[in-house]
Length: 395
Image (spheres, rainbow, N blue to C red):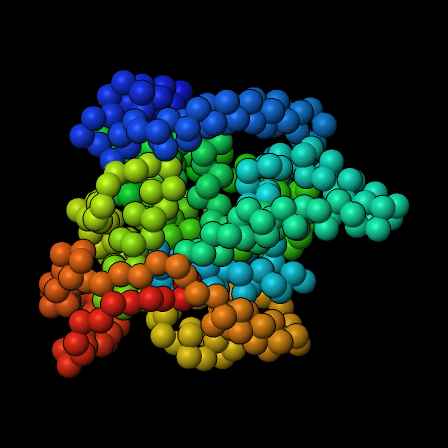
């Protein structure tokens, strides 16, 4: 496992000494974030990497753990992957996922084992006091974020795990110096074979540690960023099942622009308006076309291209269909799981709103940019609808 020290130091340098004319200008808000980050993150990183080394000593068996039929949910951002991922994770008899806690606090086997031991003690001797305190803290902190439901104890996008080697797309949310970054948005095409191998070897080892520590049967992950690395994903996980979720670009694009701007604004203060438009346009087009081209060229019963509207309108039929197609066991309680997930999604309202006009687009421009996607999936182009401001549920 190799840490991308060059990128780490370049983002450090740019943050303090070369941030003019960027969206990460060094104002009070940014300075406070950087101060906290550079106090907390290096200490946490040293602890995690020490624990990774302990894994090699005390739990070397994780290296040989065979990940059977992992399920990867791909597609553009804001295309239903969170809904499907968390729904499937409720089927704990079948699936396991990395939670925010797993990703940021206990990525190693030994950390997970310690957490499991403390949890058993808390349950047996202390009437779950620690459990209740942690959940109250979770609700008071991460639970306040409304654009996307976040919790220490909910499954999360495990592209985040690459922050531990400072080598992945999520680094750009903290340090949006795109001219310093490898082109993660075009992973398969832009990165060297050696670089791709370093990143994916680390990712696979993280999944092996998790499966080894939990003893679960199947792993499910939602990673929109893996749409750019689908070829490499198939190489490293030849037994993988892949679902590609496609959503109407008229919904996906403005929601993605809004979400990325919101997420990066948590750590920066670029000013009013929408930023990163060209980056997002290039990325979203590629994440449609590259993944679909690969799946078309490699037809397999282990892959499924799924229309977002079909998933939302008839989730039980769709989910039962790919359980059977992918060889996962049928669960009698699936209707209850699906019903609960749908109800929670409908009651959660994102706190961001947007309109195409404010982002500089017309409806027809989006239809033209993604013409092949509209034609392939027969998405509505909505010629008769007047422009409206959107306030959307989280997807």
